[in-house]
Amino acid sequence: MIRLLRSGMTVKERIDRLDADLTRAANRERLRAYFCLALSFLMIGLTVLASVIGGIGGISSKLSQPTLGSIALIPGILAVSANTLRLSQRVSWHFKKRYGILGLQRRLLFELPLEPTPDNVAAIAKSWTQMEDKLHEEFTNEIMAAWTKGRKPKKSELLR
Image (cartoon, rainbow, N blue to C red; front, side):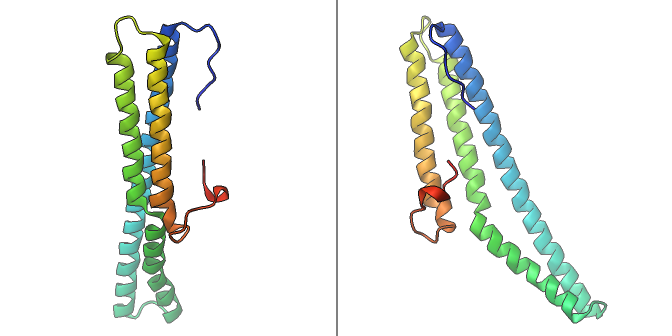
């Protein structure tokens, strides 16, 4: 969460604060990306496992028909869920956001003039806001479209 700046902060304090905020945001996006990736692999594993159990249970006649029917439903449910959640797109989106944040952090730490001004720091903060707005729009149009069946989502459906 971004904290409000108090008035009278030095340029060095602003740089340190923005650096800390960028680091937190980049780490948060990495965790979100890995969570989506782990969930995706879990769904794939469960799909394969259910298929194998259902196949072996059907061949060996060890499982009752209701049990086999229930197991047979699992891969389809997981496939629809994976398609709706668009986990691979979410992983890519979170990493894209992370790399954008890391780029801004490099700009903050290594590309500022030797004597940076508050305007130099403000320009990087503004770039961060613009990048987030652009990525939020991309998320809304490309990933959330699966939940809203192609129509533009209502404000109440957005997570922002």
